[in-house]
Amino acid sequence: MATLPNSLSLSPASDLLVKSPLFKPASVGCFFPISSRSSAHLRCSSTGVEFNRNGFSGLSSRSTRGKVFASSAQIMDQSAIKTDSSAPTIVEVDLGDRSYPIYIGSGLLDQPEILQRHVHGKRVLIVTNETVAPLYLDKVTEALTIGNPNVSVESVVLPDGEKYKDMDTLMKVFDKAIESRLDRRCTFVALGGGVIGDMCGYAAASFLRGVNFIQIPTTVMAQVDSSVGGKTGINHRLGKNLIGAFYQPQCVVVDTDTLNTLPDRELASGFAEVIKYGLIRDAEFFEWQEKNMPSLMARDPAALAYAIKRSCENKAEVVSLDEKESGLRATLNLGHTFGHAIETGFGYGQWLHGEAVAVGTVMAVDMSYRLGWIDDTIVSRVLAILKQAKLPIAPPESMTVEMFKSIMAVDKKVADGLLRLILLKGPLGNCVFTGDYDRKALDETLRSFCKS
Image (cartoon, rainbow, N blue to C red; front, side, top):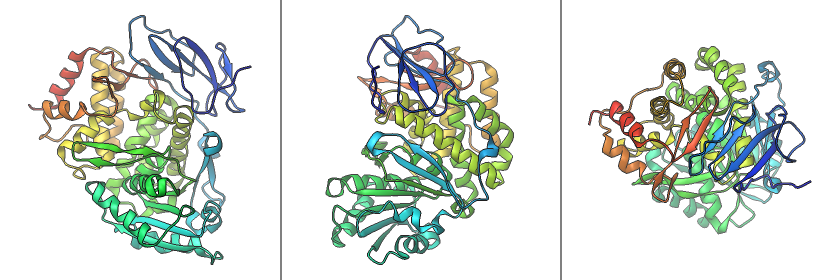
C-alpha cells in the first residue's frame, strides 16, 4: 500500500482517503495511512480540490484554479478537558521528524520541566515586549534556569504593537543575539502575543541560518492561531506579513493563566480566529461557540480551555496536511484578505488583528451570499456571534473601494495576477479557496461596505 508524507503534495486526478485525528471513517476513496486514528476524504482533479469529512458532493466541471473545500470536524466532549489538573493537555502537530507538542493548561509556567526539556543548548534569548515583560519575564527566566545552572538567559524587550512589526525592530533581536555571542545551539523564546511570536520566529529562522525556538503565547489570538504552524515574519509598509518564512518551533506552551492579565479588547480580538475554525471546517464547534460565547467573554476557565484546545486541534490538523500553504492551509485565512487590507490601509496597530479579521469575515460571508453559495441564515448567525464577541462588523469609514483593491492586489494569495479568496460554500463548516468567482460579487461587496 502506498504512503504519503505528513505534508501532502497533491497532484491532479488523485483520490485520497487520509487519516486524521478528528475525523470519522468514511466509506469510499483510496486509503493512505498517515496516523493510527480515523479518516477523511481529500480529492484533487483538474477542476478542483475537495476536502470533506462527509463524502464527496462532486466537483464542478468548470475550471476552479486550485479550489479547496473544507468541511466540519467531529467535536469532542467539553467534559474531556481537564482544568483542575496540573498535567497539561497536549496537542501534537504531526510533521514527521519536525513534529512538536502544544502544551495547554493552567500554571504551566510554574512547571519548569516543560520548558527545560525543549532547550538543547546552554544559551537562551527571550524575546518579549514592554507590556508582557513586567508580567512574565522573570517567571519564564526562572522556569528556564531553576535547577538548571548551566543555562544562561538573555532577554530583549521590544516596543509593543503591530506598528513595530518591521525590519528596524527585528534588528534589535539580531543585535542582542550577536552582542551576546549566541551560537547555533541557542534557543530563542517568544514570550508575548502574535507580533512577538512572528518576529521571534523569523529571527530564529534567520539567525545563523536557523536556531531552535519556543513559543509562549500570552494572548488568545496567539494561543489559538499564530503560535501554531510555523508562520513567521514581519510587515512591509505596502502589505502585511509579506516578508517571512515557514519555521516550526520546538514546542508551544499555552499557559491559560496568562489570559488573566489580557485586556478585554485583546480577549475579544482572539475570538475572531476561534469563530473562523467553526465557519470553515467545524460546524459543531461553531454551534458550541454560539451557546458559550458569554462564558468565553466572562473568561470562564473551562470554556477558554476547551476553545483553545479545539482550535489548536483544528490548526494542527491542517498544518500537518499542508505545512507550506499549497492549498488546504489557505482556508485558515477566511476574512484575512479583507482584514489585512484594513490593517494596512488604516494603519498598523490602529485596529487589532482580530478586529480586522472579524470585519473581513463579514465581508467574505457577504460575498459568499451574493454568489449564491450560502443561505441567509449563515449570514445572520455570523453577524450575531461577532456582535456577542463585541467585535466590529464594518470597516473604518476611511477605507475606500480602491484602497481595498490596491492592497488586496499584493496579497500573498494572489497567483499569476489572480486574487484567490476563501469563501463559504454549502452548509455551515464548508469553505472554498478559489479564484473562480464572479468579479461583480466582489465589487458589490466592496461597494456595500465602503462609502466611496
